[in-house]
Image (cartoon, rainbow, N blue to C red):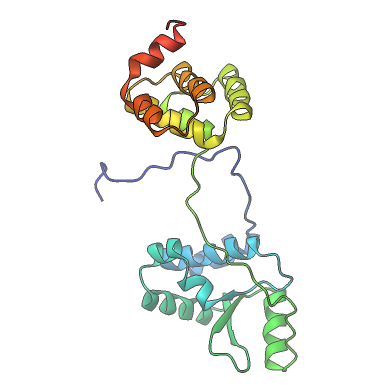
Length: 230
């Protein structure tokens, strides 16, 4: 991958700072055992996934992994997924189990809860009352208006932050995002320009397709608007 095609991280956003806990042992004992990026990605995914779960017993089914397109894009294919799962099990980092009467493999992190769960399965005493599991998948979080402002217009000062906060209360998020897109297309990287679009939509209606087409094709209309001219 050339420098021109390398995807750049745009920074953590203030509204998306949910934490994923990792035990200290992860750094002191597990990291020295890891010998591939795929193993590391897969293991970090495990910790992230169980952090999202609401059930009392934290586990991952094979289908939880293979059905997540974001994870599979990082892993490559199911053959690589299976090989790395087997390696992590051999290392003692993960436990693999199979419930009676079921074909699908399930996985636990080798911790107190995981060890207790595997023993219960082996002893025939497994009783998972959390049968209903919501699907959990990685998603590429779309930037909010603060992220879009920084990306397309400039740094956020305290004054700008207050203005954005007020506009966020006044206009729907979808309106703001589309207005920013229009401003960027017209190379009018100015929040007053964005506000002029939003104000006109509020008066004339955003749903009119002809109005929206005019919005993207007539930048002078908005320059006049935020200069206070007709």
